Image 1 (cartoon, helix red, strand yellow):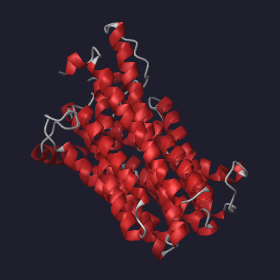
Image 2 (tube, one colour):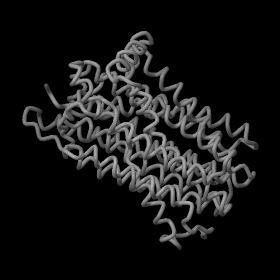
Image 3 (cartoon, one colour):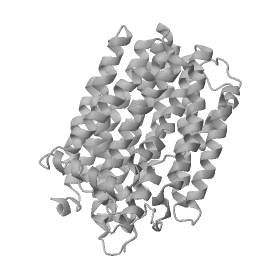
Length: 433
């Protein structure tokens, strides 16, 4: 049995009945609520940075300080994701994941004890944000662990034909975790206080990883995965290898740009929330983006094959640019929520298209590595967009902060246009029609 993860078929190749059938089959293959466990496993990735930005903003009333703290978490998480790719084939990788979860839980539980105070708009007091970076450094992007688990489950069940469906479902789960995590953050912050969000994130980090490790599927033979992004196959022509490498670079840039857009939106959100004194409600507001993002992602998966993922990427990247321009218009929480909901309609499908396109430009033995790097690029981009937006909002005004998402939205749009320009001239295009 091959240990490679087959690249998913185009994200738009599944109709609604087929999608429902795939989900039912995967639930049957995983057993004992594995799909729900994997969704809950991702929640700390949303709770941690949103909890940090909410807690710091409440403590200091400084959007800049809050943005730096949350950006430190995102940067640490991005680095953790890159490091994880070097240990996917070690025999003790599942035990290592459990140890990392214990570290994450401990750091997040103690994080409210970290001294925090408002800092000026500069790079002063960098050391104050070290605990938040360490919190991110132990915050493993669980999407890789979930995808590896599906690989072992379906190989054990001798149903590797369902792997493309599993990869599509994992991409939708990423969007679903945003809405769930943001809603939980908003609910807890408004009822029990922002500090409690950090403690809940700590408990979930440990609890869900332990459940994931104790699930019966964890006993299946773990596959050996080739994670390298360097394509060394002599069967492929040099032109095709070089073309694929450039296309993969565009996907990484696109993910970084999309993350920067999300970060800039969060920066606008914290500036807006502090200015109108609704900081505990930030998670609830962000949940509007997550909700429409998840709905739009599910709808996108069900579209027919006549719309190719690269054309969809251009469509949604353009829509993201147009909707981000509306961030300068809302004057109240309701208007801001509506704008976030509109932007969310473009975010989930964009992520789905990006991860779907990875199937076209990465051989089977490189797919997991590319997905891992795309996830890390998204986290790093989020940190950048968050800091830039908060900086302009604090240094100048909210309107200046609202211009940053517009600028960041240009990156995925430019990446999508460049990608399709390269694709049409690539030898790979002849392989996919």
